[in-house]
Image (cartoon, rainbow, N blue to C red; front, side, top):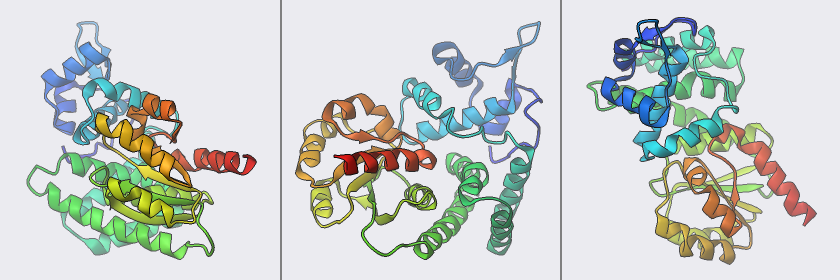
Length: 304
């Protein structure tokens, strides 16, 4: 499961190879196709399933959502909502090669090589492109496979390295004056790196961000919001919210804040209908696309 294939999208794989690359059980993969049409392979004349590299990455994405506690029946909508926001991972063989180099450095636990590759990437591509197409796919793949021997240690090395680099980049780009948005993540709702990357995506797009916490207690959010000068309090939630919290506590929180409450991430995507009923802004499940939506929200506030 730790391997990233270096094939092109044109190459097709039998089901046994997909299972080897992703760690999924073939029975489960067939069930996803039959019940939910999550991964629909092509068929040979004799009826055998063949999968593209895009299908392999789709399986990995599904496994990542499951790891966050999202029900399989809900994942199709999440995949559909993000399908037009970013190019498919590994669509470019050049990015696949970079992913392979990063994995090779992690396999021998070489932070020096990881730092060298990181520097090379930043000399060639933009920050968000690097994270979206190279680093985050590797991070996600190792996260899914972390129960396998050695994978957790590889993931921890990469996670620690990237958190340090993203935080450093955010600190260097920090602006004076009141921030546009106060960014929090409710306790247990996402990994710190995801929270930091949301901040980076906003900062790189010209939005001034104040990072508060990746483990924010929900019951203290009103207190935090009351002492912030930011016009928007943005919560990043990558896991489904408990139904009871989406009712009275969330509505009460929204009414108690002087600033605008907005949610982003898979948790907000899954609760989009309820958020609309409560009049709470929902910014989608892709933090790389957060900035345009947040800018529109800030513009609407100025108009008001």
